[in-house]
Amino acid sequence: MIQHIDYAAISPPLILAVAAVGLLLADAFDVPRRLLGLLSGGALTVALAAVAVLAFGDRRATFCLPDGLRGNGPPSCSYVADDFTLLFQGIVLAAAVIVVLLSLREITAARMPAGEYHFLLLAAIIGALVLVAARDLILLVVALETLSLPVFALVALRRYDGIASEAALKLFLVSVVSAAIMLFGVSLVYGATGAMHLDRIAPALERLPAQLDPVAALGIVLVLAGFGFKVAAVPFHFWAPDVYQGAPVPVAAFLSVVSKAAGFAGLVIVLSAGFPAYGHVWGPVIAALAAITMTLGNLMALRQRTAIRLLAWSSVAQSGYMLAPLAVGARRLPEAVAATTAYVALYAVMNLGAFAVVVAVRRTAPARDTLDAFRGLARTSPATGAALAFFLICLAGLPPGVMGLFAKVVVFRATVAGGVTWLAVVMAVNTVIGLYYYLAWAVRLFAAPEHPVPAPAADPGPAVRAAIAATAVGAAVLSVAPQLVLQAVRAVT
Image (cartoon, rainbow, N blue to C red):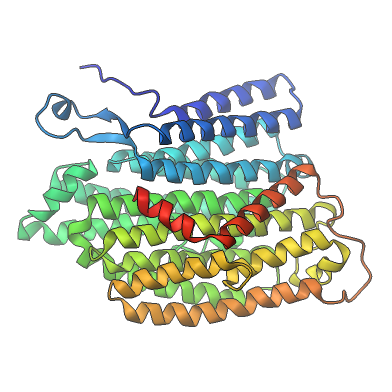
């Protein structure tokens, strides 16, 4: 039987696939680097428009099992473009547009091949788009690897940089191990349930024979470990600081926001659609991971003296906050999913803004990477310094960055409502720790510089200025009415 393919449902990744091949071919004909960047950003914008069009239509699905199509039951589909999928695809594509803007001059400055860079970036984004739409374990694994493999090359694309090569090797080795662990877990789940589609795994787990219970439980924990690598949860996090430091800054921003958002979307889909019957197994595991992740991430961030490594450890800590609501297990799971999704959306704006300012500062002064090098930035470049201070205040969760405070309140409320009070206490302590290093960096921006220096970000370039402005406007709007994000998330989850 030849399956019917709903090309409208898969239009966002399909648009990017065509664009990626086209950009690679265009590079062979010496198309200017900036034009390649504009075409890449244009393709992402068209894909984002396709997501918006799909959002106004009905739920679409494709690659469905034939027996479901013949009327023997509800169709089990591998790719589903529902409201949850479209929300995360919108987040991924909007963040990717910012990453492309940050990359335009970085490619020239670092002497990276433009065609290869944009091809690999779009390929990774395709993996992210498919990951958030996947509803069977095979497609989830394939999408996860499609997201991961191009990133290895992106990290190492500065071919004559030993630090970048080392970072790419670390990322590759950890990713291979985590993929093997996840595949083993998938095989155990399939062996226990005889199903790959999540909507068939869930009822199979509810009526699983007692003798297969340990097999299914181990498989679920191993699948969770595979996603732990993607979201940089402890103990699968140790690649993050070195990779963020060795990668081009736009690639680090991609890992911190786009890759993390897709990873959390995949994790939420698997737990809520496939494994709710085993919430008593994965709930305590996630609670322990969340507590350890946020604590270690914040404690290590206190020790950092460079901007990129601080953002890397901060990103690890933020993963702990995002995991916390899911620790409730099957209890109040829809509320937990909404809380995690809202936090991911708000975090994407805050963290992208911080990375955009770091790119701007390093644009004209590459050696200025230490936190002390940011001292006096608000005096030498008021707009850039004020933008970074606002993003840091948002991440810390203080006024006027109300969106950061609202995000933490949302995950606190979901965790407490789910009965995991001890984890809420751990979150409160870690929030105080986070306040210190975010505010310590923000204070440096307004302090008098130790030595007279030229304005470090006097001309970051129009693309970087546009990225900073877009994220700053987004953060300001969300700080005025952050509850709109939660309302929208609840409507689609």
